[in-house]
Image (cartoon, rainbow, N blue to C red; front, side, top):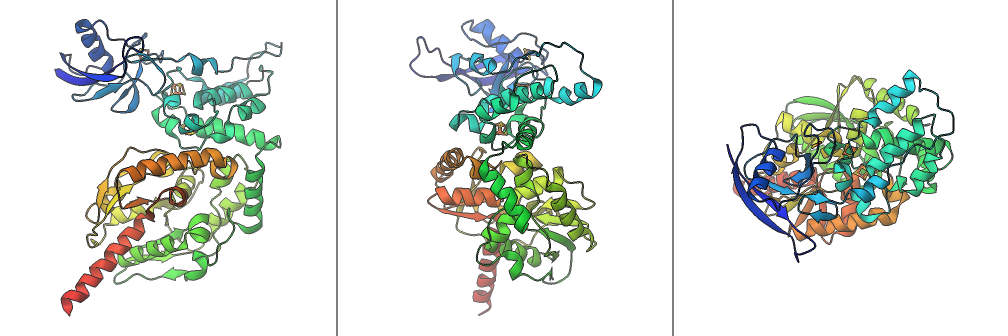
Length: 485
Ligand code: SF4
Ligand code: SF4
Ligand code: FES
């Protein structure tokens, strides 16, 4: 088959700037990116790229295909793609400098005793051991771009060593020194990892949990934990909370199509209650009866992400009880962080759905078209945490014009906003600038942490997706009134 692709070319020794060159070559059906590069190399022996095993084992061939890190030897080539080096310092063309990142991987420091590991330890370490040092994770880590952070695979290695009884070094102090608390838990790293190593959950959060047991949690994180113990919420209350403004059961307009429980989360309850009220109106308008247990509390995400697990059982028990005692089989949340936590860190007898999922599944009454150009910010905990991307587009498509922009972390998650505010602000400012540069009138999202963070740094309005839908319904009603006059 014939494949045409653009390849990044740059030789720092003789080029003043990078450029793209387009090549068309014939390759076998099912060929990988590496086969394509070999074919190009036959025509242009000056092209530099790296490979060794050709079987996904050595990690040397990682490049970006249309912006996404892949192993060239494993990824099927497609016509029309662009091949870039990883987002690391370029040595030449597709070859990047891996040395600085690889040097940060901790070797074992033996305590002298060379005993064998028991089976349980081997099993615990296993998920962290499969790294092939391709550095795909390092190339997409937002924290590394703004902080002195050794990066995801270095943290993976620290956790691996921390679990190894033969290792005699203080891995926790080392990890903290190397930026453990700057990670936003955006989950970019494990999403691109060819070996699917869950670095945020299996390394970062675990290292933070050990740090917590050693009394090394950040003071601001400890304050948040205390606040949750005292009030059931992770932030101080605002003037009037969402839960104070709504009854326990909200009947829909017209026929009941579905009954759901509503999990509001700390941010929409205390800081952004108007957005949650808009969401309720959208659910009502679409025939959804909403039950809102008022004794619900924080989902525990701020505790899990920062490794403070002692009080988590209490929160989980109270939340599960609040919904099961009312016979609720589907719980809806509009907070990406809560949704990801309820789905992945709880064992619930009910189904959990993001509000964009339930609305697209049931189908909604079409709102009026609004004369707005918006850009949509995908929250990390929706996109990576729950795999949700399309529903927001489906809901917004006929209501506003959407200007798409590649996803990036806004820096609000993982306890970074409270624990490392400078790092969080740097990421927030950068993301806000990118979104503003699209020229959109409004930035839309579906996570209170993202909305609040971007609202602080963007010089334009930031709204929740349900607020846009609600505005669309209000416009529709206004037009109907004008028409009926
Ligand atoms: S979760 Fe995000 S910030 Fe943390 S190490 Fe992975 S890529 Fe970096
Ligand atoms: S953790 Fe995964 S993505 Fe990162 S270097 Fe290792 S194999 Fe590559
Ligand atoms: S060449 Fe070894 S992983 Fe691709």
